[in-house]
Image (cartoon, rainbow, N blue to C red; front, side, top):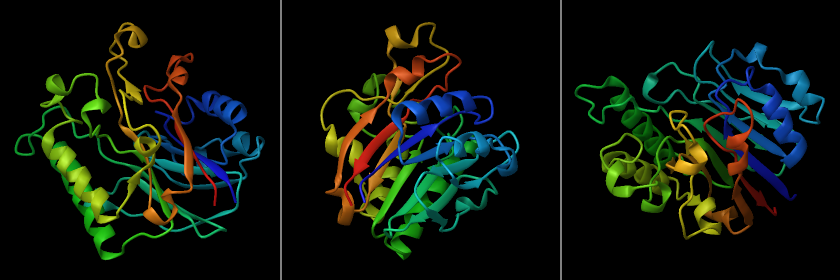
Length: 262
């Protein structure tokens, strides 16, 4: 069952529902995972998405904050949701396809502005969240699974516009990168985007603060698409839709896609 999966931090699914619809019409992924929906589940505009063929939805929501959703053209059943670090946030939901593939959709905490848990509670929460993810994958190693989402960390030197200048900036600090790598190794996850595009600068997020984000190009690869080794070899056609960041009233993130021949 070949399929294409996309992940996108939409930064308010109700505000940007027309952009979601446009992406679904133009790219037609079989599955779209959204983060930072900022909506209770019952207020997600699912009828508009269903009209485009996305008749299946699994979601966790909160009013005005966080929130994750999986929209699918393919039949998918709910496979749970974890409250890592006990934050009480809607940051994870999982679904299982008929072919047995489990899709995990995560929105890892951003971590605030100061990379020091002693003075910044949000940074500590981010590290604790990643630690809980690591421990969960160690306890129950995933098989035949895909993990996507805004993990809020750009791990590699080529995943940021300036490795040297961002070493002390939240999202690229060594302690965050180490926590992400421990979590990735715990599940033996394969970074599909970098498997397909191993070399060169690659970003999925550009700040709203830049007067001209495209010209400045000070991006970071915060959004990820991973798979377990048993299906990673079936992945191909990875891409980041940079042009979507230039749509009217956009999210500050761009969609990340890959296809699987399973």
